[in-house]
Image (cartoon, rainbow, N blue to C red):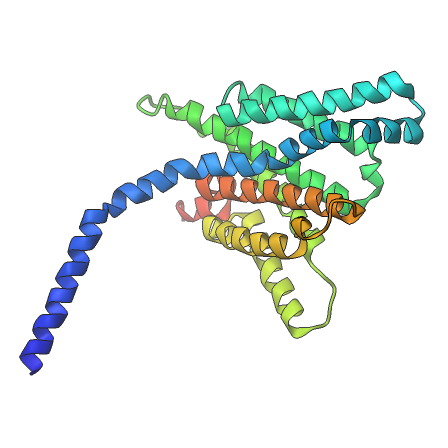
Length: 280
């Protein structure tokens, strides 16, 4: 009976190995490596696409808001909405298509700055931190292009490191974690305290660049769960103002998730503890 069981175990093991071989797991891993930056870019520009569509759907409301807030009149109010609409949608399409990515990011940078001033976000710490996270995500997008540019000359010896890329990655990591400051809650419940401690530790690890890819991946999973739970805008009827607020918050958080996925793909860069460990 023992022999029979042993043969069955061996047969199951052989079948499992054959199944794994047939699945070509290495090809799956390589495919995942190629799809990760694409997924990161799609998530990253999602807030700009959503806000661009919002400008089209709420053209009159946005124009009137700017007129009431700044007294700029009908023409300048309409021009503001048009710049936001075209700039965000055009910049997002260029990023997804990998066409003139640096110029597209510059355009999106301008939109973030314009909205920060126009909507008085400078005086609202919550939204200011989230906009800074968007800037960090865009910096990582530029860093990815630097990596691709450098890889074209992979066979040619170079002097020194790609310092601009390293500093872009460092700045992007630091600004990305601003999002998590707005997610932490000052509650005394045991679960919330543990959640705050773990999230804060992961933020520090990503910032200093230690165990960066793993820490960023855990933050992606955590932030995704928090985003779908806290910003479930689709559960509210369209006539409620809170729906638009949650929708905006949801896609802005999704963009930061895209930045974290870019960290998972690119790694921490040269200015990080992970990189310096290689030299120790």
